[in-house]
Image (tube, rainbow, N blue to C red; front, side):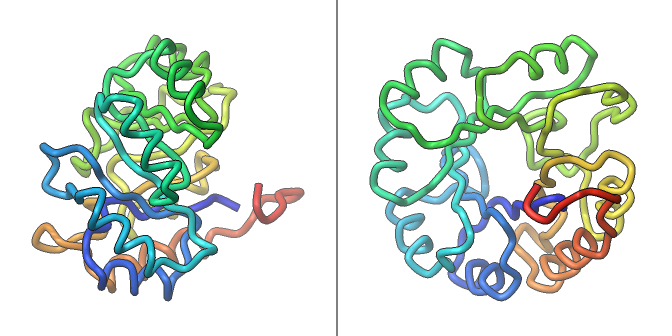
Length: 210
């Protein structure tokens, strides 16, 4: 079954909603220029409220790897998501500091972008449009024949995610702006999104937890 990541959580009410829905992952954004930015201190407080069955992902944009590793070591996050220009050398350096999983996000404009994503040494790859959090989708026809598991992001909400999951069967879906109203997370939109993903029947032979 396709996993679910609710990204850009920043308030205690967001965490309470996530605890009720139990997505597979939630995301804290540590990019200072983002309107969804949370400080490490705030993230630690929110993490303390989070159900232990939900894994916390930290989203970073060209952050020094030492800072990323420190948040992983502190238990504030379980997984690092790299959303900037971090290259293979950066990932290698980060792996010297931590054994926690790494997600690398790729902007998809052309088939060449997908080729680069396929070869990434990251544990998981995320395919998105632009810098992320824009609510816009990339040209998903480019995914025809793509042979690596990926996290799908961009242009997803409760109205579109079901068809995307049926057509593409991604490893996971990632949403941020699609569960917001007025720039803040909307509990009802969060619920509707999660329900839409879980309403998609599993394919024959597909096991829970794939």
